[in-house]
Image (cartoon, rainbow, N blue to C red):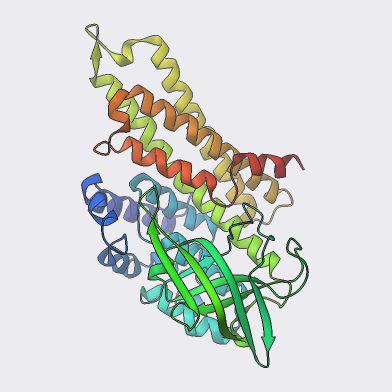
Length: 374
């Protein structure tokens, strides 16, 4: 496999690295976390002007027409800065849902606004009882003439408080855990019957609980085929896992590099901590596991782009390993920093919390180990 990125992708990488360096010092990030929406609208517009919000949007609708490799480059850099803007929710999940499942009229209506930064999207797929099973859905949509009426409750919807439209997975036929009978609709966040309760999460992001009571949506807002939406939903989950894994790899890099730098400066018994062999071995282990995760990320991403037969199995392996090693690297970084590793003033703990949340999104390591084995 060729792991070299193109000249255009190198320009993309350089620009996002500069953005993170200029805008995401820890104190600046902490101030953004405390705001009502939890991110900077100025940063969001900068992302739009640089073309990042259209990275996966088809060129016909104003986007870059990129693939999962381009998204990986962005998300790995975002992981290094713990970026708060809803790129993942709006572009990786929401825009892809419309680009892959929407009709041409819907793409024309929605995607240019996403690229320009004037429209934000998100995906509501999780429910209280579903845990990690995408097909476990009790939110239902019933036909009402040319419309559908949706009732149900969606949990942990990322950045729903700032989104104008929400992609909602519903059950239009079949039983609670059937893969058949699932349909995806695009609803307006301010539609009658939509109640959004937003809250900050432990990693500084924003999420919402959404109640849907008698929400009417036109059949023209159906994404994909009626009753056959599971395939599209699973494709969104795969794209989400690859993007989150890239973000996790970026966070792991900061953790092990910060730990090495700290142990070279901190002295104990008239020696730098890095002089002690047992700690050297620990940091070598951190570095090796980071490199393993990065290699798995490249493999899984390239296999998905090339539509390889074993791509889904590689995605399961990636999510499992990133979850396990993210915890391993985070725990060791905190321990080697001593009591400082748990403070809000040091960025180590913030990266560790983000890695723990990433492990829980779209199925934790144990869940994907079971899928890999099956």
